[in-house]
Amino acid sequence: MTDVVEAMHLGIGSGPAILGRPLAGPTRLLTAPIYRVIRGTTGAVGAGIGVALDALSTVLVGDDAGGGPGREAVRAALNGVLGDHLAATGNPLAIPMTLRRDGRALGLDRRSLGRAFPRAGGRLLLLVHGSSLPDRSWTRHGHDHGAALARDLGFTSIHVHYNTGLHVSENGRLLAGRIEELARAWPRPVVEIAILSHSMGGLVARSACHHAEGAGLAWRRRLRSLVFLGTPHHGAPLERGGHRLDVILGLTRQTAPLARLGKIRSAGVTDLRHGNVRDEDWKGRDRFAPGRDPRTPLPLPEGVRCFAIAATTARADAPGRRLPGDGLVPVDSALGRHAIPERTLDFPEGHRWILHGAGHLDLLDRAEVLERLRDWLRPRRSAPPRRRRRSRPRPASRTSAAAASRRARRSSGRSRSRSGPRASR
Image (cartoon, rainbow, N blue to C red):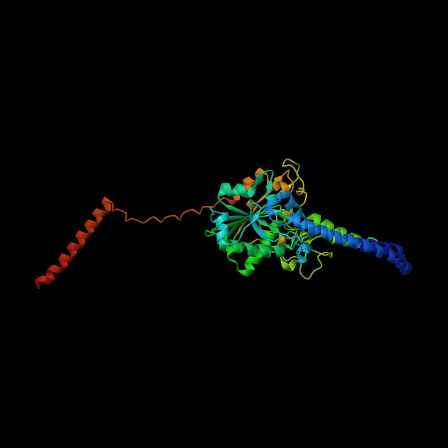
C-alpha cells in the first residue's frame, strides 16, 4: 500500500508529461525519506499481520468438524480471495482438496470407507461447491440437496472441499485424481457416478472430466450425470467488472498505482472472467492483461447426461424481456449459451431450466430445484428386450387338405398307368 501511495504522490507531483515531468527529481528527493520511515513502520505492522495470520491459522486449521461452520466459512473466504498465494507460500490456511462426509475428511482406502459408509451402495453422488464457500454451504436453511437425493434415490452423497483460489484447471486435476482414488477403494463395485455442482464448482467438474479423459482414468466411464446450478460457463460480469476497473485505473499515471490493488484477486477469481477450465486457457498469459476471451471451446463430456439450471431475480409473470441473472451469473452463461455458436454448450432443450424469483444461493435450497434434480437423476430403467415370437406352422384348412389329397390321388393314378404297359412287355 505504501508503494501505491508513493507512486501516486510521485505521479501527481512530477508535473505534466508533455514538459518531461520537470519536478520528478525534486519530488522524489523530498518524499523518499518520508516513505522510508513509513515503510519501516508498516514493515513492523506487516510482520504483525504475519503473526496474526499464524495465530489465525491455529484457530482455523485443525479438526475441521470441531470448530463449526463459522470457522470454515472464514477460512473458505480467505482461500477464495488469496488461496493461490496461501498455497504457494505453504500457509496452513490453504485448504487441501479432500472428499468429506459430515465435515470430516474421508480416508480413501477400503477399510476407512467401509467404516464411514457401512451401507455403501454402488451409486455415488459428488457435490462440488462454489467460489469462496466451504462444502457445508450445501446445507442451507436446514436443507441439503445431497442428503435429500441420497434418501430419495439411493445415492451415497460425498462432499468435495477445496481451495477455490487456485486455478480452476488445477482444482480439476486434483478432483479427477481424488475421484479415481475413491472409485478404486469403494467397498462395492461402482456402477454409477453423478456430480452435482454449484457456481464455480461446475467449471471444476468439467475440468475434472477433461483431465480424466486425458489420463484415461477409469471413473470417467462410470460418470452418468452432471448437473450445473448457476455455473458461469462463459464467465461472470462481477469479475469482468473488476478487470475493467483495473484497465480504467491504469489509463493515467495518477491512478495507475491503484490498479495494483485490483491484482490481489486470486487465480480462481480471474478464471471466472470468461469461464476458464483448461490449463491452456491461462498458461503463458498475464491474467490481468486486457484482451478477448482466449479459450478454446471445450464441449460437454460425451456419453454423460448433462443438465443446467439458471436463476433469475425476475418473477415468472414478469413482462417479456431479457431476463436478469441471479445477481452473480447471467442466465445465458448459466445455460451455456454464447453469442458465438461454436462456444455454446450443447444442453438438450429438456435439460435446461430457469428458476424465477431467486438469487445465486437460492439454488441450494429451493424445493423446485430439488424436484428437478429428482426427476433428472432418477434411475433410468432400460426396457427389457422384446422377445421374438416363434413362428408356428399354420394348421392347414379343410379345403386345402382336400385339394392336396385329390392331387396326390391323381399323381398316383398317372404313375400306375405309365407302369402298366412296361410290366406287360
